[in-house]
Length: 328
Image 1: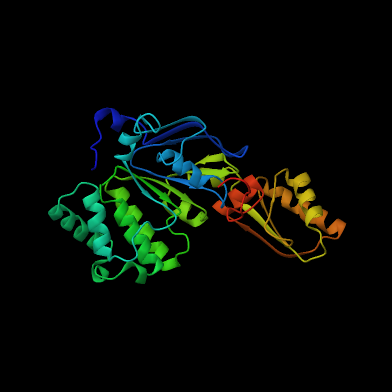
Image 2: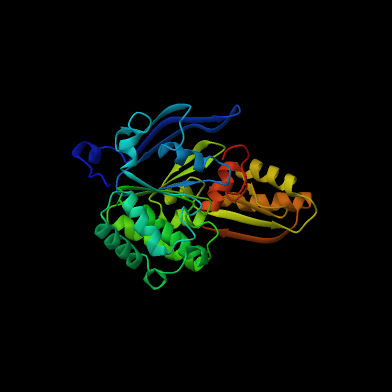
């Protein structure tokens, strides 16, 4: 059952991790991660597939033993006080943990009973959650006949049966269409408005931008940047210069000239498209002259406010949707 936070727990961070480490076959899939999540906020962990996001979640939720470092939930050590931690959290993984041969109502009723609710209490809880997540019309339908969006809503509802003060969401909208993603986002905002703290992992830049109060950018098992969305964007410059080459296999030559003249690391999205933080706008003219002098042609040029995708590209040199290699 749900455990009410005492004064000491309310004063502690919802999540605190220091030098968290996990090694698989000599590969550091989580390599010394530090995280601090304040109560009542959405904290986003952003990174590509394989960056170590899910492994981090598993350690924080007592599902996996760390090989080093410490992690605490509301001040409780995840290894030494695992049972207490489990009463303080809810977890929604990447894949629905539902019985497909049961109806939506039956799933919620059984989960409620397993968590200690009386039959009457379980019926009441199941009915409340079906209404809260707009699933009343399909309460009697077997889960195997649900769409992806309906499954995610039901899975999220199941993770909230015990009304945990901290909810872990591991890529909750992966594979959903834009309409269902927006619906899940609204549900998450609603939970936070009622006092739930959320730790969210995602590979979607717009999702982190929309939901997270603070964001940790993870790549190859390490936190490589942390801050609010605006702070991360500002870290690469007020604006971003976008260039599209007109061909000629000049990408490597162009990036070298950008580095030399603008003094910044640029991001290459493909053989023709390059973006770079524009910290000194006056140098762009010098850059274009240098391109002309060496015969590099441009088909497009534009200046835009940076996005989180460009932040990730600039910091890591690759997209957040690319597999980073090694970590999981």
